[in-house]
Image (cartoon, rainbow, N blue to C red):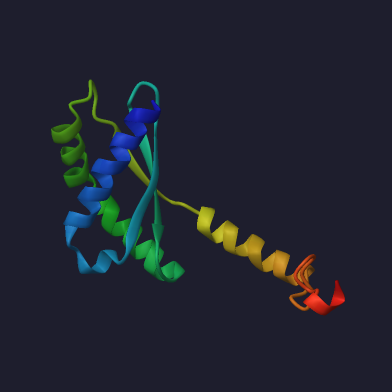
Amino acid sequence: MRKVNEALRHVLADGVERLGDPSLGIVTVTAVRATNDLQQAVVYVSVLGSEKRRARSLRVLERAHGVLQRNVAAELHLKRTPQLIFQYDETVDRALRMSELIDKVVPASLPEEHGDETPDDR
């Protein structure tokens, strides 16, 4: 399934790039998780911009669902072409939040563990 998911991600990333819809914005297909029976595939995407931009981009992807599904069928020749479900990938948002929390807990003014010595101090 890992190979199928990666092949789906590659085909869908190319398909999204070729859509050419200016209202889509900057979208990256980050991962795809298909069910074992290939009935469905959740397509995780990241979108550059605000929450409003994210919602608009997801609507565009839903409208382009048929085109993208045909691309998958034509390029991969799977036993079954999965129904595509687009979902925003919150991984980047979570990573940014974690980084902000770490920055609040660990003050930037603390000296580095080994980098605060001068040659004269040794």
